[in-house]
Length: 395
Length: 125
Image (cartoon, rainbow over all chains, first blue to last red; front, side, top):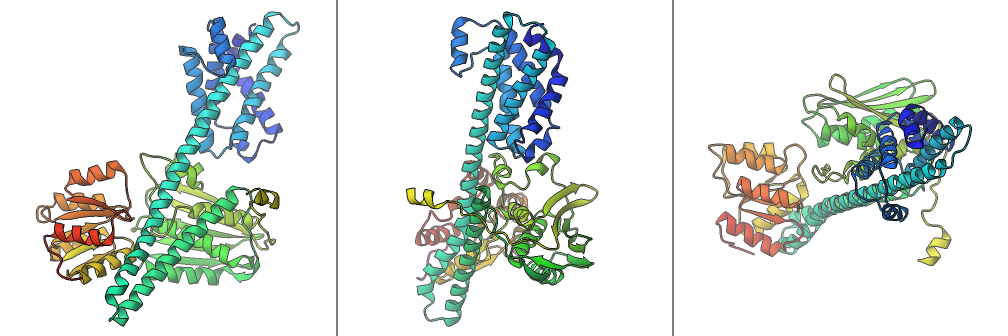
């Protein structure tokens, strides 16, 4: 049987072998999400059809240079490859993981095909060449789509960031402009000073969030300094602050069990505050926002619940990634005042840096709940410098 | 009276002071619902409206006012960091007199333009 026909008749076993191989190379945590095989099957089918379509010598040269020739089958392969890459990006795969998947797919096909062939045939070399060319075309297209989408997302993110920073900066500039006009009015001078201080704090917090994002995104991790603390006391403090800032909203707190332990108080406050701010912004005012802190056997569970429209199912996997989440030009992300949309990402990093995790559930019936689980004792963690001495010396 | 709607309280308060020291009575509020409630009590000579606000965005406020029989004559200027062409075109289509972009127009020019649109000449510095 020719390789193209073999692929078309064995899509399911190839995908199974691909999954096993992909897991064995340990390409990363995201390879647990291989349930989404639809695009991989489409790539396989498009690859086989592309292999079966007649190819001239000139087209072969074009393909060997990494350029795809036109034609219905080749276009279908490009389309499936592009869609696959964009979907993987949405699921949080990095480029290496996408490339590893292709390695696995290639290996899976060849292993199964060779096992099915007791005797080698001279046509096999031609089939192998056509197969490798098609897979390379698919890989090139996938990488181009992936890179293009990342660039788009980054541009969108920077545009949002610059807009969000312009508001507090504008307030500072405006107050500074008013200041000479009110030089005879002490109360106004004080008010101007307070506006400048508040806006500067907002900018400081935004830049702090951006630095946290950059640091963790580059793999340096978020440093934590655990010390004894009481989560219930921190929760009550935060609830008082949020009630004062949002007097028309119902904000409740429930605590249960042992909620004292070793955590980084500032970081946990940051995570809880981000989740509460998110619930106030996106939750319906018809329902209360509830912070619950519950001590379990080996961990503490911090949950923030809000009611209203659920998060669309397709958005859930990327909800913690601001770069991907805010990437749509049609519906640009709108952040709450004083925020650059990093809140959920930072909450996740805080949970991870304490040896814990964060999850989200969102349905029409039960509303939306973000849940952080952290063990009672977190080990101190020092973030690695983003740039080492050698890199800094080169700058 | 010039009414300012901006969810960034310090931004609205700053502009309120700026207009006051230019000789105009001005009031700032932080949300669309509050602004709509005020409009029913007293119509301003101009409404200065932000776009990106959490509970009711500026375009929705604009549309609501322009569709309301008693409020549709309220003069409205947008003042926002939103630079999307579609947002600006939609604001104009809905009846905004102008779209001023925060951070790109100097405060002197901003006050002059607001006063011009309000039909109230600048009376003081």
